[in-house]
Image 1 (cartoon, helix red, strand yellow):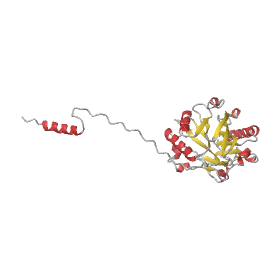
Image 2 (image 1 turned 90 degrees about the vertical axis):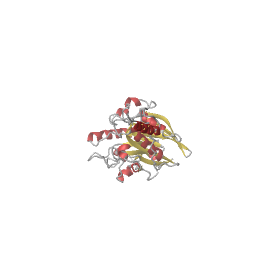
Image 3 (image 1 turned 120 degrees about the horizontal axis):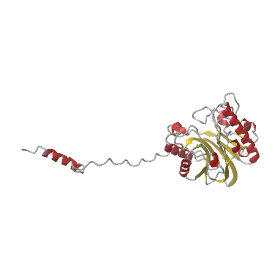
Image 4 (image 1 turned 135 degrees about the horizontal axis):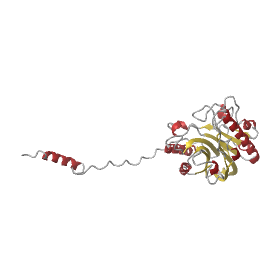
Length: 322
């Protein structure tokens, strides 16, 4: 009787040999996929200039939070890094930074920059007023031209008026164009929402800040920057004046360079029509302002799906002759 299995076995052996194994060898596991190459950095056109002091403020929308804001934390980090690196500004006031470790990673990926948050150990009582999972204000700066002399929280007695987020004040020594001078940078995040109770808290905070600046820094260059959660021409609260009208009225001592955004009906967010991210300067710094340099930088035109991957706010920039 002929062995009808022999041709089939020979065929299997031939096929197995061509695959590098015998019929008795079990198939090995599928090879593990190789590492995914990092995404190419997004090219953001620079806005900083070598001869000027360039400042920006940016609300990063729950940066470093795993439960709020953009869901892809790694993508948000890389987008924020690319904007800051590409913009090439000297000092940034940042808002809504939640994850301290994520912030440190950001700083480590920005050669030439250093930074601190409101709960940093170097900030007196910072950890008392800002918890680990809370939105924090912070500062980034180029170490080649700026250094921190001191850092502290201010107006802590008005903690409620600032929605539990007292401003971070950093005294900096800035050297540029063979000129060294002190600059006070204050990062703030005001109370949100357009109801009258929220407006009143913003107004109270503004009155307290005005009195503080008058008494503490009467002749110093001061920049207050951040998310003011209201406009400076008229309030986002229907029928109300701006809660910052006290600064607008004191034009001899203070000014909002970002008022030009309000006057031009330029929004600083992707959600609302008003400019609510502002920069306030003392008259000592106002004289150095480069006219027309304020900008709500439309980085959303360079970053795909910016609103959902990065932030609902735009960076706001200004420039000063130093």
